[in-house]
Length: 300
Image (cartoon, rainbow, N blue to C red):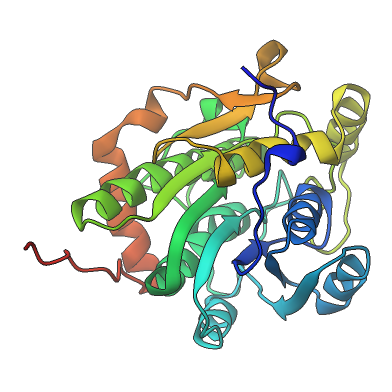
């Protein structure tokens, strides 16, 4: 089997790609690779100035639009202002182990940003999507559990990593249920997921720049063991363009999926629980006020 590299990305001329969190890390690398192949790439970023700086480092047709996934009004404004067809949506943006925080709408910051923001964005854009939805999860999902009694850490003492693991498990459950629903209505759109392994990005930084002791320890470990942003982006690109079935999950093929060439990888038992995936979808609709927009295609 040929090792997947950016050389295997097909020509993307005439295609539109949206990448969230594309101003840094693997999001920026992913956007750069797709723009270099001719795609029109939309950098969906919280800070437009940083997006413009990132766009300046890319070749091709790259535009910047503001999107704050921690604010459902911003998500709706972004989706409402997006009228063109979308070939590929890459739900890349995310936070990892920040101090306890809340989104504008009152959700725990990691669950609200990593899962609910992308849940709302995807469903709002879905009528315009014709190719794939790729959602970036993490091997940390294996430590996750969906606590429906306290999704937003309002009753329990807050613990940053379990909250992160819950959000990343939610990403995989979302992908599975999205694919089930797409198949059910006869849509050709595919939902896939990926994780970067250990990639040296600024994911572990809190949005306001604070760096707690757990952050500093995590950064030190990641910087010691991690692969580059270029390599960390390859599983996302693989999930985006390779011949893989809907519901696939890609990650590095090396030791403990920490680094190496991308391939399809396994997921935890919790991430394969269809009943939990359906329940999470229903709860996510209730929390965001956004529902699955597609109807079944008429049979001939």
